[in-house]
Each structure stands twice: as C-alpha cells, then as structure tokens.
Image: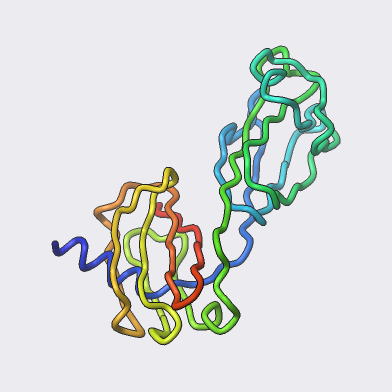
Length: 196
C-alpha cells in the first residue's frame, strides 16, 4: 500500500520532454545496442565506422541475415540519423556484413491521445531518466489521475492527482523503460520514463 501511494504521488507530476535522441554505434561487426525501444517522434543517430551502413530490411530478410532493402530508411557508410514517426518494429542490417549477423531492430511505441495545450503546459516530470526519485509538478485542474505502465501495457500503479508538487521514490521498479499516462478531463497524454 505504501509503495502504491508513493507511485501515485510520483505520477501526480510529469515533465514533457518531447522527442528523445538515441545513439546506435558499432562494436566490430555488431550494432550497439542491437535492440532498441523508443517512442514515436524519437530520433536515432547511427554513429558507425566507415565500413558500416544501416539499411532497413523486411523481417524475413533480417531473419535470414539478408541485405535486400525493403525501401525504408537507408543510411550511408559512417551513419546518419532517422526520426521514427510511425509505431512498429523496424529491422535493419549493415549490408556488407549482414551475412555475418550484423543487424538490429528498433521498436517504436505509440504516444496515445495527446492532451490539449493547456494540460500539456501544466505537467512537469523530472529527472528523466530517473535513478530512484521522480518529481512531478502538475495542475490538478487539467490532470485528474496518473498511471505507470510497463512496455506491455501492464499497470504498475494508479493514483488520483491531489497535490501540485509531489516527490516519489521509484526503488520498487526495476531499471528499464516505462510509460506515464496522464488522464485529463477529456484527453490523455502518455510520456516515456526511463529508470536507470
């Protein structure tokens, strides 16, 4: 019960960090990380060696360590960046080294039901990433409740918003990516939370 109350308090405040940026590098003939989960609108920078590129392929091609492009993103040797605006799973390979298993995948999760500008401007959540404590600044007039969810949609905590400023201890949650969903009077907003 105590942990639930703490999570409730922690969800009462949320900061809207808009799009995030992630970096994929190469370690020899491997992408690092080779499995990445992000939210739509996030950018991925590929910082690769001069003999490596990143080309999107179909899942079937990816499974067979093939290198035929599916017409999606194609970054030159050395890398570049891609902004992922459409939810889904993206499979990619280094075309000269796909046969050696140099491949990766990016899962893009949707941001659901964007809250209006008034509510958006009334929410702050920090720091994000968090290493154990999270602060919320929130206007209860626009956001009535908050939920913390896992990547699979499992709800770890729910609470009604009662205070404008709340601090929450996150030690009960494992490191990883979570979603914080702010429930407004008419709309909801979902933001990603990283716990280190």
